[in-house]
Length: 200
Image (cartoon, rainbow, N blue to C red):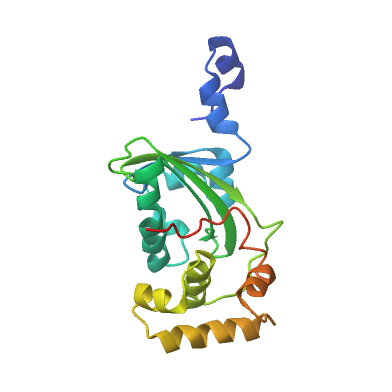
């Protein structure tokens, strides 16, 4: 149902207007299921809003593994601070991948993903997507979090040597001499908006 702008102004329903027409993607979730989203969010992903309602969020990720990985990374911070933000690769309806800045707030911090609201900003104009395999995306994501090759190997159930081989191939693929140069080649993903690994 379309939000009637004149009616909202007359009745003082400004929150409804703000949600529907905010120039950033907004989505309300329950246990990682999309309960409602605004126009900017659905357009960003190439869907009509009604196509996304009551869908599991995994349809917007390049793979189920990445969907699980993001969950695992965000839950601890949401419990501790009730907020979360990062930059990640998402998938549009047509299968194209793009970088996205995501921020979240939980209404149920004791169970962070039970009920939450999220904002999504398309970073395509400032960070074009570079072709990476799913495993390369996982490794780059963990490198950006500050994990060592040994820590990444444990997370992905790989050998340390395998992670080192992937890292070396990534450096060669993008003509980078170290991880910082790799991040710059990928669009400066080491910038201030990437959530870093927190110290235990």
